[in-house]
Length: 205
Picture 1 (cartoon, rainbow, N blue to C red):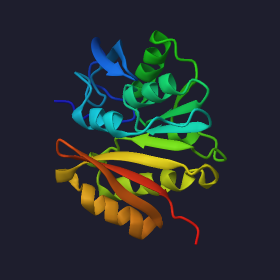
Picture 2: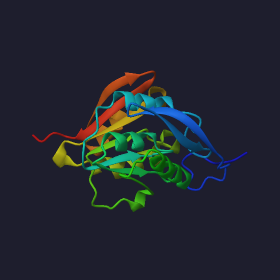
Picture 3: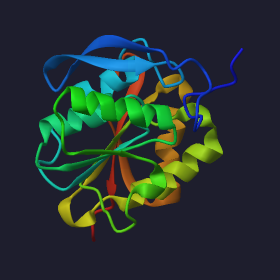
Picture 4: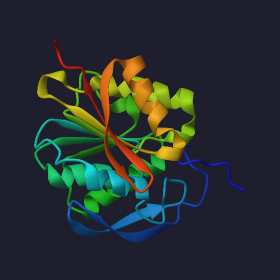
């Protein structure tokens, strides 16, 4: 039995690809997935909940999909905002390659699928959309969010939108973000057992 997780850097499980259909940015599209990445059989319910409840992304600037998997969130951002620069970030090399393949398949040219350290440190994000990898464990999840959420661009009223299953700690994560990162966080939507959280810099007094 493979010990791979979708957050493995180099999955050893079969890389045999499959084609699935999904609706992204109002379009029915065919996409390539494979084993060793998150939800390879279909668009998962959490990501669907996020995409169904976020407002339209900014039309320009740098946009981040944190934990991109095979790319549904990053592709949605890129299709909706062709003049923006989309960063699809993951530690899983197979996921990044699938995201690149899917971007090429859809004719998307404004998407960079990269490892976390390949995003220039100076980049600040006009929006962050993420179905974060809750199952990496609390310490790693907190470190991930501590690294990326403060990089929201305070000059453009930027916001991060996170989807978390209620039974996997959505409410405790909401409290932690507010208390430990000093960011404003609110529950923006409830959807089939998921919470969609909006996170932004605290308003100036």
